Image 1 (tube, rainbow, N blue to C red):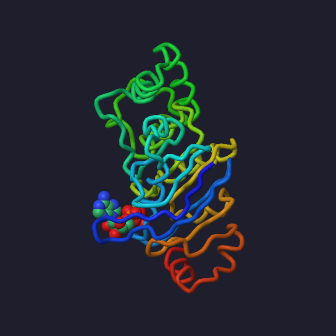
Image 2 (image 1 turned 90 degrees about the vertical axis):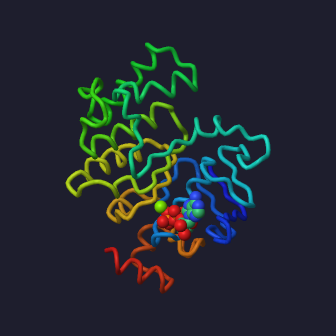
Length: 240
Ligand code: ADP
Ligand code: MG
């Protein structure tokens, strides 16, 4: 579903991604961990062209998105992203947050967009909040809306960039529960997170990034029981 081949990313003199090769299968749940600044966000942002690699090739669902003529808008329809800072439209109601992109980008009729929007709000347990504004919601609720909004585009791939890092501790589980529920559905998921419980229960594979490279890649069982690299071990000892 996602393939990165020899991907490099430079920001000025900073070499942030170094010859990354990575394949994510259809339906796979991949968890990405690693220290701050190691390139995790840049890596997943290259999967929907929020960042363009300096070199190398990214293929999503059979389409080379790094090709010259790739259509960014099209790519983003099938690859949705959920951010640490929710990024909801503050002047739109919750339901409008869900209907906007399907109507504008996909041309879905309003009635249908609203119906689908309500169905996804129901799924994240927030149907009764359809008419309120994001500022009237808790952080956990806002993030659940952000997930519902991403789902409303019916993407094939969901990218999550530390979706619970900005939340108060008591709100983390409600967001993880929505993600766990989603994981059971067969959608392809790439999740940057430091929630190791989530990684252990949901991930098919965990990769550890350090200084722009994938240092380790393994099933969660192996990854946590037998980390092979010193850096993985010391990272795990600091966060678990
Ligand atoms: P992580 O998500 O693992 O914390 P990032 O991918 O955000 O790491 O960042 C990797 C490195 O690239 C960091 O040194 C960061 O400061 C730098 N970086 C990220 N985005 C930009 C940017 N738009 N411009 C310049 N430097 C950036
Ligand atoms: Mg990051």
